[in-house]
Length: 128
Image (cartoon, rainbow, N blue to C red; front, side, top):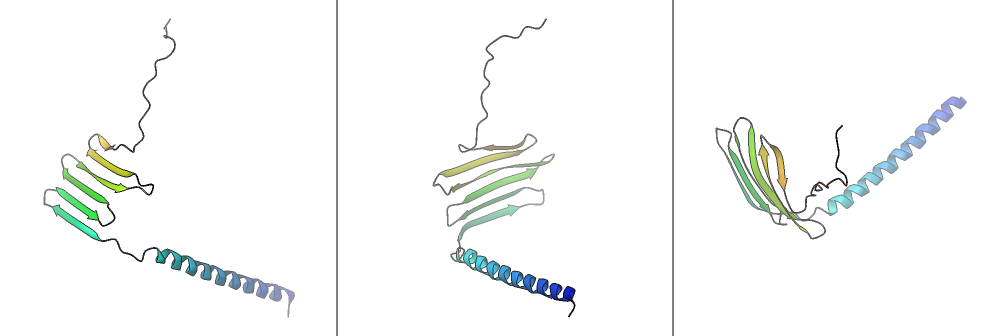
């Protein structure tokens, strides 16, 4: 047997072993992730409307406390408003409302960061 064929065969064997190990690892990860999704979350409410003029509404609520609603229409572009609420993993209730249209997307919520207020300069600028 040629030395190059032997090296090539051993490389293929190592690659096959590595692929088998990766396949086993992927299967284990899939089992662990699938185990965490055993209990389905019920949909308690799912109301949707839409008309021929581009107006729509939807409102839904899930069994784990997520609530989402939105209404919109076509008026020289899309205009929408709505919001959602849920409990963050830290136990903090989150409630966000928004409007979207000509002025862009404008979210409102107590959990959102607030821009700093302007601070007066310690001196007055003089133009010469």
